[in-house]
Image (tube, rainbow, N blue to C red; front, top):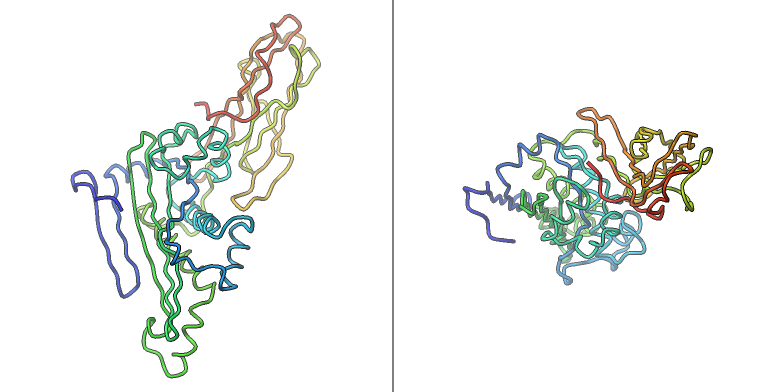
Length: 362
């Protein structure tokens, strides 16, 4: 944990609640409440796991192994799967708050294609990541404790989580480090003769530790949100991870030929594309829906048939995804990396080889 900044710069507090097994260290920039009120758009990076190896109990107990297989990723090491599970919990809780949260699979894809995959867990790279994703701030997480100890007459489960929110200019807006514990048997309180033998075993259930993980993630999200969370999850900020003209084309598109555009992004949204200023707002329809542990995604397709009078070279292709929320309309705009030309007399296009969408154009 870093040294707390002076009170003149940060509001800092320390809370210790031994009776409930909770410890919290928190600080935030005084500007954060106002920024939250404006609907700060944030991206949540994959969580790191710095929990000590000797306190990381996993495969020896079947319920925990099942937890990772069902909610993490059977192909990931236990530590990475744990980071994915807690990241998903934090995102789910933050969706009930005041932030516009970018879908994790979208931000992961764009950061990877932007060449910053190695920096996804480094808060010092927040500025570069924010510029790439065109978000207001980036949230980093670290699982600092994850343990379950059994001492014959008692058991203790412990989860620790640190969240750090960095502004697009790299300034730290918020940090919380929270550790929560629950105990069974003698640690959990007075027990009778029978329960002294059975309660520690109950405390080893994977479901109990999973509940503690959810609780810790929710409380950390509450710290960041600065108040209560809604009863239902709010919408994630709509995003596109892929935009392209579907096929190669030598020379300009001629009258009667189709220019097909495809995009992949948040489902249940309105998506349109522009061919520079030649044709704007061409509708794109959802053609497929894909399930993913990090969130569903949809494929959108649209086309424009070149008309006899169309003539232009090096036309940029833009896609916009839009969704109306209860509080605000959320829109993101993307530019394809290539360009197209239309009309028999148009100069050849610079190329139609781009595929992955670049940063949102604003």
